[in-house]
Length: 212
Image (cartoon, rainbow, N blue to C red; front, side, top):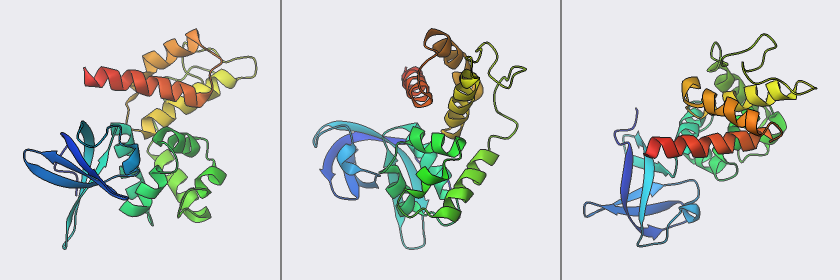
């Protein structure tokens, strides 16, 4: 069942090993997070967490994330057979959402296998399941297979980097129209950045636009 709540904004009153407590409207909400100590606020300060709710027969559980991208990756992970909420949180405590997305796009089985609870079969399933979501939506490709308006470097690396960055951003829940213009512009200004840096900068820009 999908989440009934989009986000919670309130005072961080308690941090535990697996969860935090956020007080909002006089109620303290227990919210499980990937890394409670990494919540960017001290106890007593206001935080915003994007929520995912899991309803079971014996409990209603809230999972919270400091960004929409992390929540999107959590939901993707839950959709993979053999990965439950605890496993997904453990994975997100080991790699950032953009690192996981890039590993999926690059079909980096070795890196995915290094994650807690992920073996060879689960890593392959993770790649197949999430890359399948990208079929038919790999961006505005030019005749060389790269993004239009972004010429490849001498070895064709520009096309590869930008295609991987776009696909990783799509895994994180973005649409092409949200990030493609900025991605082209960024490449033209800084063609030598590593793929992960393109993703990081676009995420920062996109998140700033969403928050306005």
